[in-house]
Image (spheres, rainbow, N blue to C red):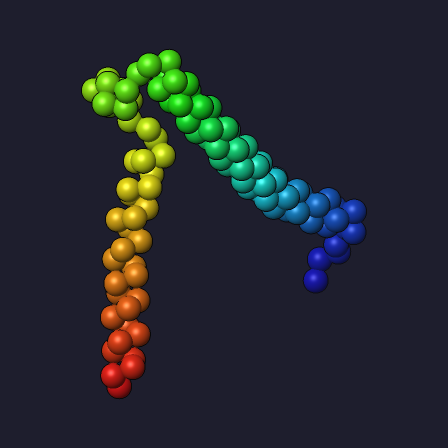
Amino acid sequence: MANLDIEQTRNQARALLDSRIESVTALVRSRQRITELRDQLVAAERDDKRAYVQATKDGWSADELKKLGLEPAAVKRRRAAKRSAVPDQDSGHETATSIGEQ
């Protein structure tokens, strides 16, 4: 067996650990950025809602805004959420019925 230099081995081990630490650090930074962007999106959606309400207070009707392509953003989200929730509820109901019948 060859003579091992303890300092050289420790330095090699540190280099391996450093590369692993770098990758997990990059992952944490990425996750932090996602959180920051989600927070910014929530704030932007809140500002959008306020601006829409202000436009209606300034005399714009919902129909006029819709003709301009400016539907309230919350309506779009609610409709999409209801559509996706209905099949899940139905399939869950069918499963419960099937289990109850067995």
